[in-house]
Each structure stands twice: as structure tokens, then as C-alpha cells.
Amino acid sequence: MRKRSIFITTTIIFLLLILFPTMISANEKTYDVGTTNLLIRSGPSIESEVLGKLNPGDQVKVFDESNGWYQTYYNGKEAWVASQFLFQGKQKSVTSPSSESVSISATGVRIRSGPGTSYSIIGFTTLGETFSVLDKNNDWIKVSLPNGNIGWIASWLTNQQASEAIPKARSNKSIQEPSKSISGNASLSGYNIILDPGHGGNDSGAIGVGNVYEKDMVMEVVDDITNRLKQEGATVLLTRSNDTRIELPKRVAISHAYQTHAFISLHFNASPIISANGISTHYYSNQNLAYQVQNAIAQHLNLSDRGIRQDSFYVLRNNQNPAILIEMGFITNPSDLLKIQSKDYQSSIAEAITQGLISYFKN
Ligand SMILES: [Zn+2]
Image: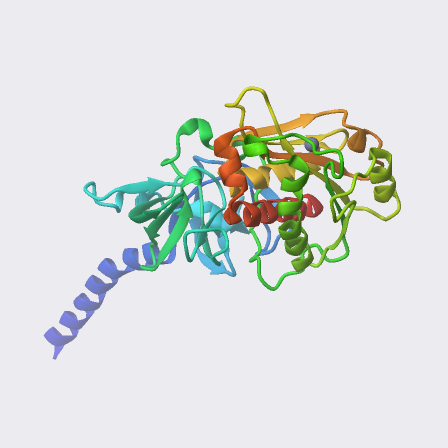
């Protein structure tokens, strides 16, 4: 009887010794930070107080999870960080050396259910995360996810894209917040957006490869942009909806006739140098609006990112409302034009402008 109780006690102590460290490590996981200026907050919400910032190289011990936020401790206080910008470093070595892998080269990259931006978003991944490649379809890579599911990632946001084509805007310092799901939200409710398709009528704008007219190309994309913005609850007005010439002062007058929260002039670029390509956003006084939109463009489109520029265009300089002009690619560049004419481009530019505006109004 006595021997038996000693045996039981010894067994319990032994079990505690081997189990206790295991229990600790099962409850807290260490994550690496995959973005710059990742905010640490007092609660699991973007409304919560900011306690500090994290950067790549920092590590976070995670104790709990709530709606896409990870709980940690910061200066002895409970703190929360958006989970999609954290990754577990050991994932980098999970893939076997024989299988092809792909590494994410941007922050907050969407994982989709199929190979295109029209497919639903099923998750997010971030800078430095690595996945096994299962298949490829044009610019999209099919990957296996840590939870065993499969998803698709745009190749231009990974190391499979040549480095010079990786969007520049992603390396700019920006404050990253959890992205909202695109369905069922009305993030632009209450905002008046004016879309200004450039040129029209006897002003054809630039003439591109195969004699395409800039004035027609902008009308090709304006519908998708309008619909996507309306989906988010925005009120959208157009300075022209058919092939008529509208003088520049009238375009500005339309902007001033409303309480316009953003005026977006839509153009395509042209150059005698055939190789000139890519998308740029121009501003006169509102740099942040240009920055947010161009940043979203760099994330969503596989045309090269020419960045933002201050320019004295009439519709920007004379506009009292926040205004930008987007040169949405070069119609004189055969490769840009091919992309511009695809259905995927039209939904992507619509998504990018919408997400850029959402970020702009949030900041
Ligand atoms: Zn133009």
C-alpha cells in the first residue's frame, strides 16, 4: 500500500515534469513580423489605442486569438496585433527541398479561391511567407496552405516575379491595418466620388498600338470602377458618360458643384518610346490620396509601378476638392495594352481604386 502511493506520487511528478513545459509551448507561439510599422494596440480592433509599432525582425509571442487579431504582451500590458501581418518563421523550412516553393514579396497579399482577382478572397498572407507550388495559371500560382486547403496567389506579389517588376509602393513605409472582407461592407457609404474620363468627342487623347484611342479606352474601364465603388456604398458621378468633348473648366465646375470627397481623372499614357510602360498617379496638393491609390494599384495590378508625381494638370491645380489623375498604363506599349484590354485588368483597376479610397478615407 505504501509502495503503491509512492509509485503514484512519483508517476504524477514525472508526468508533470514532462507535460508542463509542453503545455507552455502549446499555449504560446512565436511569430515573426512581416510588415513595417505594424501597430500594437490595446484591444483587438483598429479603434483601440496604439501602444507601439513593430517592424520586420521583431518577434511576437502570441497567447490568444480573436477575430483576426493576436494577443501578446507589450511593456507588461495586454496588447493586440493584426494576425495577417505575422508569420511563423519555421514555415520557411516546412517545404521539402525537392518541391518548388514561392515566397511572398509584399504585405497583406490576398489568397483567392481561383486564378484571378474576380475569385473570392479566402485569406491573407504576408511578406516572407513561403508556400509549396502546386500549379500555375498565367500570372497566378496555386499553393497549398498551412491548413491543408489550396489557394491562388498573384505571381507578381511573389519572388517568382522579376525584381524590377515588383511594385515599388510596397516598400514605402505605411501603416498596415487588417483589410476588411470585400463582401457585405459599405466602406465608402456617404462619400461622393467623381470619376473624370479624360478627353472625348473630337479630342481623342493619345493614340495607341492598333490605333486605339485613349478617349475610348477610359470608357472601357469606367463602368467597372463605377460599379465597384457603388458596391461599397459610394455615390459616383461622371464628368462624361458618352463620347462628348468636355472642356477642362467644366470638369472642375462639376467637381465644385458637389460636396466631392475625391475627384479621379482617368487617363492612359503614351510615349514615342515603345518600351515606356506602367501606371502612375499624379496629384497637385493631395499627396496622400495619390499615395493610397497608387499603393493599392501596385498591389492589385501586374503593370509596373511608376509611383506618384506632383504635376500641375488643370483639373488638379484648379480643383478645391481632393483630386488625382491616374495614367493607367501606356497604350503605346504592346504589353501594357494587351493587359489593359483584359477583363482581369478592368476588375483589378476597379478594385485597386476602391481599396485605395477606402485606405485614404480611413487615414
Ligand atoms: Zn489623357
